[in-house]
Amino acid sequence: KISVTINGIQLEVEPGKTILEAANEAGMIIPTLCYHKDLCIAGNCRVCVVEVTGQKRLAAACATPCEEEMEILTNSLKVRNSRKHIIELLLSEHNADCTKCYKNGNCELQELASEYKIMTQDFLRLAPLKNYTIDQFSPSIIKDDSKCIRCQRCVRTCAELQGVNALTVAYKGDEMKIATFFEKAMNDVVCTNCGQCVNHCPTGALVERNYIEEVWDAIADPDKHVVVQTAPAVRVGLGEELGLEAGERVTGRMVSSLKRLGFNSVLDTDFTADLTIIEEGTELLHRLKKALAEEDQSVKLPMATSCSPGWIKYIEHMYPELLDNLSSCKSPQQMFGALAKTYYAKARKIDPDKIISVSIMPCTAKKFEADRPEMHDSGFRDVDYVLTTRELAIMIKQAGIDFKKLPDAKFDRLMGESTGAAVLFGATGGVMEAALRTAYELVTGREVPFENLDITPVRGMEGVKEASVLIEKPLDEWAFLDGIELKCAVAHGLVNAKKVMDAVKEGTSDYHFIEIMACPGGCLGGGGQPIPTNPEIRQKRAEAIYAEDGGMPLRKSHENPEVLKIYQDFLGQPLGEKSHHLLHTKYTG
Ligand code: HC0
Image (cartoon, rainbow, N blue to C red; front, side, top):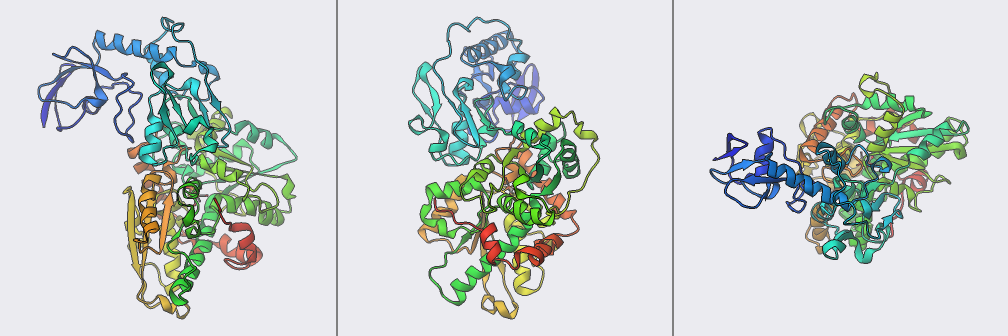
């Protein structure tokens, strides 16, 4: 350990710790803007400057490691004045129409301006706003350059977490801006709509395209029947946006709030997550049979999950030659949408034309997915509006609902019943774990050989995880699998997806099944989740997902009674004609 003094207090810190980390751990808060725990250090905003005794220039706390005997002041007059000037300069180039900004009340620059009581206009006329662009062409993301402070968090996010590089720094000096390739619209470049840039932006420069008013209008229309589905990861994130601790499970209160908002039926994406496992698991077994027992070379392995729309857009852009490796299953959101206007409409005797289908997702790419031309198999647009976890929280606040005091409520039926396997979808490795619980049992007639059904090798935050399950003594139908070690890989964050897909492309992978989720941590770390999202918060949400699974009476998708019922009453059999039409698709890039 090394010894440093911060604001007169002597501290022992680990070598390599930055001044920012050491101060924060000791309860001394230093403001930041360009810094984010998920990203490499940039040190470009200078808001975190501190005074180091003996040094003429102020140092950026985020980028300066502690040194033995260092004496640091985080709140001297020089520091305060300097910080204030920096904030004033940032504001001078910022379109500070705060009351009309979507990020009003949740903007880091606004918070700093408020803390430092920036009331002068010293710089406001020196740097008038230049011509700027507001890009509203994407169904998921709005990019407003007038709000950008050029901290480059979005650029680092897109490069480091996602390896997509849709955003970059263009031009120099006061012309400098964050731009796409040739300044095209986000919708026309390699952007996957994952929204990680939105989640990491400190201001209103990158926000989700919101559909709050459209949903209020639908709820108010007496001629419409508005159904809402909630994604697995929303129940472990929503509370944060409403004053609760990270990782607090709020499933019952979330359902209660949706009922109070006026939705006609509050249903669960988890139901179709269970259904996905039946369809996808069956598809995997069929592929294995063709490839291994019939030696059909046309069958592509490994089969890759297809439920994360950011991942789908990524493979379309980056590995179009591997599109046949994707499972043909639509995502649970889209399966739900197609069934809401067919199966549900029929069973509840409602004209599908009158159904408005809304989904609450931790994801901005889900807005893009619902907008895809492939997603009209019910004869209508299958999912009408997608709201993020954050948008739902806004509606709850607008409605004057005191979320903390809400009683728990239960999902409605049909399409509201689910198992623990389905909720796992919200965490990286969850689809794999759910699929293995079912596929192993279908093949062998026995439960998957992991204690308490917890397939721990696919859990955790490692970028790429591997697991294998030895199949022994399968049922007669699956005899060809006897002695086969089923090999699986799980990747989250597109930078990790690249590692797995490069191996698949080069033919050096021997996996049978891979799960890829676009966002770090899986959906629980989605671009539509509460801000901030960072490694500790993702960890807490993941623990909540596993606790939710552990507490469910049913924990295997094939045991979901409503899933059994839909096959009996409507779909017939997995991969049958109706399933094929409503629940499967082919992405062609
Ligand atoms: Fe996900 Fe999903 S698990 S993608 O992360 O598969 O967004 O939560 O809703 O559709 O179920 C997101 C989360 C979903 C879907 C499910 C899958």
